[in-house]
Image (cartoon, rainbow, N blue to C red; front, side):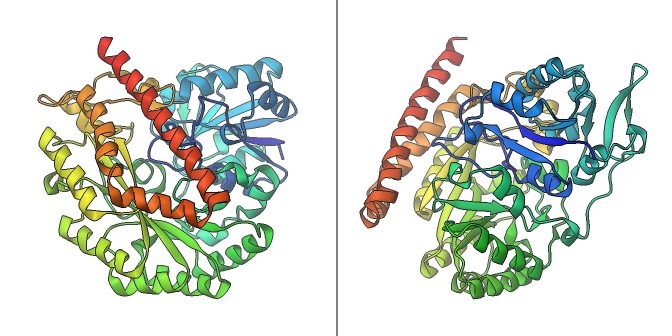
Amino acid sequence: MKKTLFLSPPSFEGFDGGAGSRYQARREIRSFWYPTWLAQPAALVPGSKLIDAPPHDTTVAQTLESAKECDLVIIHTSTPSLPNDCKTAEEIKKQRPDTMIGFVGAHAAVLPEETLNASPHIDFVARKEFDFTCLHAAEGRPFDEIKGISYRKNGRIIHNPEQDLIHDMDALPWVADVYRDNIEIEKYFIGYLHHPYISLYTGRGCPAQCTFCLWPQTIGGHRYRVRSAQNVADEMAYMKKLFPQVKEFFFDDDTFTANLPRAREIAVKLGKLGLMWSCNSRANVNYETLKVLRDNGLRLLLVGYESGNQKILDGIKKGIQLEEAREFTRNCHKLGITIHGTFILGLPGETRQTILETIEFAKALDVFSIQVSLAAPYPGTELYELAKANNWFVDEKVTNGKLVNDGIQRGALNYPDLPAGEIFRSVEKFYHRWYFRPKPIARIVKTMIQDPAGTGVRRLREGYEFFKFMATRKQEGAAEAVA
C-alpha cells in the first residue's frame, strides 16, 4: 500500500473548493464545508492522511513538508483552482520526482484530457466516482488495470473504462475517524449552522434535473443512491461520542428529502439519539413529513429557490412551481423550521424585470437568511452547453479558472439585453433590499441577545466580513467594467 496523502491545496483566502459545493468561490463571510469527497476515499485507504489546507490556513511550505514522505498524492481540483493546483503538483514533484500525483473532482471527471494537459506533473486523473479508483492506485495496481483513470502512455493519453458506480453505499467506511484524525472541526464555519458543526453524506446523486447543478451531472448521477437508515444512525451515534462538542449535524446530500420515507425513517432514529440536525431540501416537502422531521431534531433546511420567475425555473428544469414553494415555506414557518434560502441571478431568460421579481419573491418568503449567487456555467453541466451554443460567455476560457477572480465569483454570462456587469451588480442590490428590512435585522439581533458571548460575537464578526466582502466585490466589478 502506497503512503497516500489526500489534499485540498492552499489557495486564495476562503477557498472552499474541496467541498461538494455548486461553485468554488469565497463566500460573503468566512465559511467552510467539510472535505467529504476526499475523506471518503481516505477512509478506504489504510494509513492515509488528509490535508484540507484552506480552513486550517496551511501554507504551501507546510503542505510540501507533509507530502515529502508520500508515495501518492491525490489532489481535489476544480475549474477555478486548476492553475493553482498544477503549481502545487509541480512543487511536490520538485522535492520528490517519484511521487505519483492524481487529480480528482468534477473538472477532472468532465475534462480528463484537458486536465492532464494542464501540467506534465499530473500522472493520472480519476473520472466520475473516484473512491475505489483512489484505493486501487494506492494499492499500486498498474495503470492499465485501474478503471476510471486517464493517463499518458508513449506520448498518448489513455482513457480506461469507467469505474463502476457504487450501489451498495453501506460498503463505504464511515468518515468519522478521518475527521477525528486529520482536521480540526472548530475550523469549519457556516453562518446559518450552529458552531461547531459537522457535515457528511448519507447518499449520492439527485433525481432532479437542474441544468446548472454541478455534482449530479458530473460525478453523482441522477439516481439517489443511499446508505441504509440504520447505517446512518449508527455513524451518528458514533459521531456523537467522538465529537461531544458538536452542536449540529448537517446532511450534505444534494437533496436529502428526495426519498421521503427514508428521510422520515432516519429522522425517527436521530430523534432517539437526541441530535440536532439540518439538511438540503427541495421546496416541495409535504407538511406531514416536515412535522416528522421537526419532531425528531430537524432545525434547518437549506433550500434552493433559485428564481422568483416561473419561466426561468421551467427553463432550468427545476421542477418546482412558485406556489408550491410558497406553501412549503409557509408550512416551515408554522412548524418553526428555519430556512436558509439560496438564489441565483443570471440564469437563462433573466431580465431586469425577473431580477426584481426574484427579489420581491424572496422578501415575501421571509426565510431566516439567504445566499445570492451568479449563474456558474461549469463544464459538464447543461447550462455550460447552452451558454456555448448561444454564445453567452463573457470569456470562453472558463475552463482555465475564469469563473472566479481571487475568490470573487465573476459574471460569466452575457445576454443581449442584460450584460454580465449588470447581473454582477444586481447581487449587491438583492442583498441590500433583502437584509436591510426590519424583520431580518430583528431576527439577527434576537440571536445576538440570546447568546451575546457566543452568537453575538460571531454575528459581529460575520457582519464585518460581509461588508468587507461586498466592498471588495464592488471594486472587482469596477475593475472589470474598466477592462
